[in-house]
Amino acid sequence: MYLEKRGVPTSTVVSTAFLTHGHLAAKNLQLDALPLLVVPHPLNDLTPDEVLALARSAYPIVIEQLTGQGKQALHTKVDYVHPASRKGVAA
Image 1 (cartoon, rainbow, N blue to C red):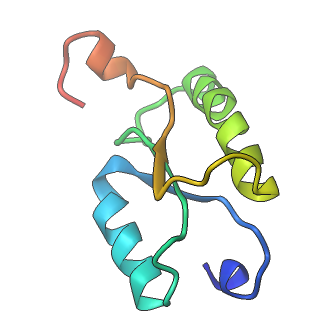
Image 2: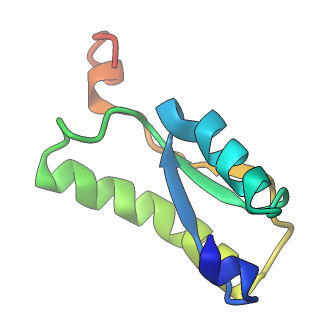
């Protein structure tokens, strides 16, 4: 967030559990319009292959945020379903 405040484009990643905190932190730093990249929560139980799949899903959004291409939404959710959710287990 500090780089963004200095005019350096960033991609700030938060999990769904910390989305509200991310918005509040940005607001406290006078960065109300900071675009956030939202990934599913939790991340700690993902396998290396699942992390790679998540990263591949997030990559286009990161590029958009770093280059300023396209309309920057306040937050953009990664198109990735947590494996536990796919199995019918609460994530």
